[in-house]
Length: 433
Ligand code: S3P
Image 1 (cartoon, rainbow, N blue to C red):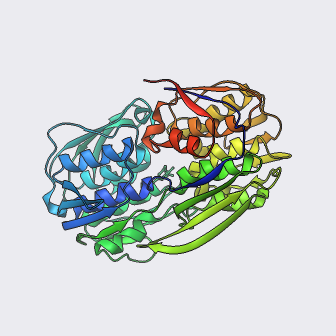
Image 2: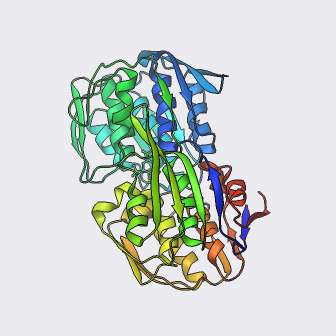
Image 3: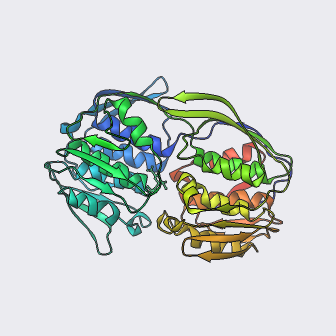
């Protein structure tokens, strides 16, 4: 798919509820699959990544039906997973692959996890090595990438794992494996990554040990989950309104988990007018309505390594925002961006440069100098967040911007184009497929 933007002719306005949180949606499905009995999920994200997880759970024995706007799941119970008849295809989703690998490593059957071209390049040793310490047997392709061929071992041993990276996928993978292992499994990380797993497990009847540990043999039971809107999807609109003169947008029901809200701190530090209304609980997660109003030209900021985990997925759109802020924005400690759905530092660096932005790329970050945005052609490189970031930046470019490689927008935000148009933004699908 190719997207084409034109400069927004007028302020962006209106209100919208971004789609459900992707991280929470994956977990709700996987936990619901493992739980004994019925679970109900309201607000589940309907996107390609989540469909991959739902389909895998179905192949493992879960059944699901829609009822009164909720997805009603019948879980199999931890010991009740079925051996899938074919490799489980995780599509573009690293979260689906890494979390399910933790579950499948502990089964009494073999299985295989595969993915698309992007996922097939992503590093899996970060989960394979600690899982092997627990007794798992997993073969990867050369280079430690998918496919994962898992020879199930129902006798895993719990470990205390000191993770070298702040990764919620690693952490969640090991906690899920730990539910089946003997003894306790706990994970420490250098900086705190998103904690949706720790927040959701108690709702499914699993008590944590300490901040981030589980006891082997803990059983999940069915639960109700209400999924807030995804702050990562909301961010494209927070940034768009902060950029386009005169804008005023209201984004409803946005998840405000403090391990995810770094974008709000950055926007405020840059001088954006952002207010939080109607805070409420969505199960173990906080949500609120966010109002963002254009407040004049923003200022560049420093984003040091300790800030990165709470806005890791928002960094592409932050780099786009930096391109129109006064002065220089410096991001450091973000080497993880190189192993996401694309090498996001390289993809954003190339695209911003093509639009006339002055920047300097580092191994673990970037300096971006704010200025005028020329029109032109950029490559989203099949990465949903990069493509959407360029589409937002296109709203304040001098001329049209063409974005190649934008098809994967559907992995997290299928309604993005129509939502941006509904606020007055100028974006169109120039070519499908
Ligand atoms: C996710 C964790 C993060 C994030 C990804 C979703 C999750 O990845 O970038 O989009 O749902 O656990 P890492 O765990 O690799 O940091």
